[in-house]
Image (tube, rainbow, N blue to C red; front, top):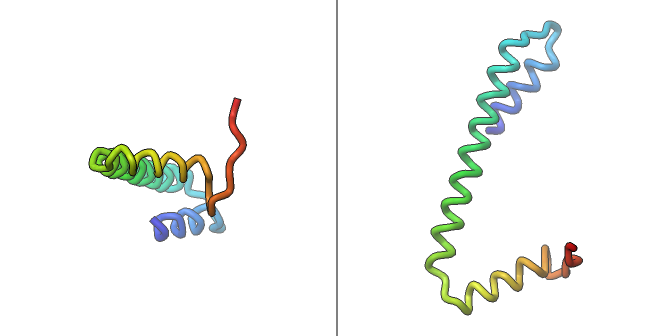
Length: 76
């Protein structure tokens, strides 16, 4: 993924602009990002299924607390 972004930078910062190459690289990066998001969602879903109700409650509590235990304001 990092290499793809580096290649995109090289394409977009070059002396000449190859629009087709930039579009192709951009589409490849978007597809890779979509795959990562899908895999993350599947892993999370599968992980949630093995948790006990107590573990799920603790996870929800931690998610509501936010990073490093700081409470996030309630959204309305």
